[in-house]
Length: 117
Ligand SMILES: [Zn+2]
Image 1: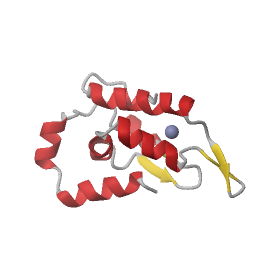
Image 2: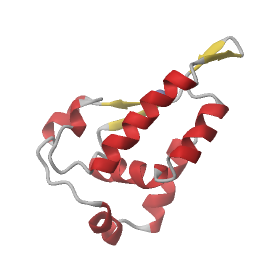
Image 3: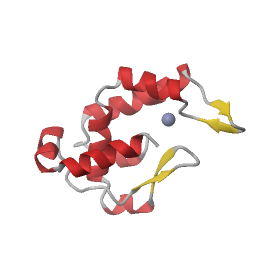
């Protein structure tokens, strides 16, 4: 788990989501398709959606709090945390309810799309 989440205000749901994601990798290992190793094959994403209905909310929270620190690396199928995270490590973090009062529908849909690359 990345140190960016090591903060007293990080919601427990975010930590649990990451743990579920990593444990799911043990159940559904990477699969080779089209001469490429796919870490999150369709069955992984389907299973994750079924065990983590909070998925979109969690990603919205992450992109809301770390908008300039998270970069999607499509080829490696991962979200990379850039060095800028240390600059905002101690910023206040909102709970889900507080965040949803601020976040716009446009931002919500953008974060959801990023998940499904
Ligand atoms: Zn993964």
